[in-house]
Amino acid sequence: MTTTAYLPTPAHHLSNPTSSSSHTTSDDVNFQGLPIPRGSVTASLSFYKAPEDGTPPHNYVEPLPGVPQRNWGDNWQNVELQDLRGLEHKFSLDDNAFDTFQNVPSEEREFKDDERIKRVYYPEVEKLLLDNVQGAKRVLLFDHTIRRPTGNRNPVTRVHIDQTPFSAAERVKSHLPNEAEELLKGRYRIINVWRPLNGPVMAFPLAVADSQTVQDEDLIPIEHRYPDRNGQTASVQYNPSQKWYYWSGMKNEDRLLLKCFDSDESVGAWGRVPHTAFENPNTPEGAVGRESIEVRALVFG
Image (cartoon, rainbow, N blue to C red):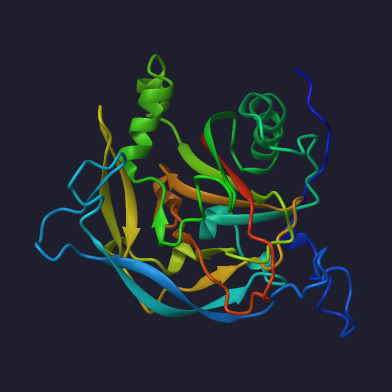
C-alpha cells in the first residue's frame, strides 16, 4: 500500500498568523463570515463527583432497564482556558502529554465510509505518528470515533482520560495477544490523533490539561461494564492547580495528539492528558456544529 507523501509542520515551529496584525484576515472568520473565537476564555467544565452512596464508580456501556447508566455525578467548575495559538512551542508529548501539528493534508475528504477511512486515512495517521513521535517503531491503530451534530456520537462534555494503566495493558493483550507478553516489557503508549472535519472549529472545541499540573490523586478509575467484559477509563477531580488550554480555530489540516498512557516511568508522571469538549461562551450565534474524528493508536518503542 502506498501513501501520500507529506511533511506535517509541528505547530510549535510556526508563529500565530493572527498575532502580528490587527487587520481581519481569513484566519479570523469562517466560511459563514462569522468571527472565530480566539484568546483566553472562562468556561464551565464537568469534573468528577463521587457517588453519594460511597460505592465504586461505574458506567453501563449498554444501559440496563431500570438501572441508572452511571452512579457518579458532575461537578461543574468555571475554569480559565488559555489559547494555545502562539504558545505551541511550550508543549510536547513527553513533557505535557499533548502536541500540535499543522499543514497535514489528507486524501480522505468525506469520512462517511469506515472501510475507506481505514484504507486511506489510517495509513496517513500511522505515518504521522511514526515520523513525529520520538522513539516510535511500530503503530497499531485500533479504532476511531466520528462525532457529528447529526450523528449518534456527540462531543463528550465531561473531563476524562480514555485509558488507565490497567486498560492500556488490556488493550495490548486484546489486540496483539500472541505478542503481548514481550510488548508489555518494552515502552508502549496510547495516543489519540484528533482533528476537525469541518474546520475551523467554532462550537464545542476540545480542551486539554497540561499533564504536569495534574496529580495522580485527581484521577479516578471508572469501571465500564460491557455485556461480556469490564473496561476502565479515568474521570478527573477538579483541582485549582490544573492548567487548561484549547487550540482555537482548529482547521482540517491541524492535528492534536493526546497521550492517554505511557509505560515509560521517566515520563510516566506526565503520561496522561485530561480532556473534554466544552461550550465556548464566545462562540457566535449561528456557528456550525463541530464535526471531528479521533483515531486511537498503540505506539510501541
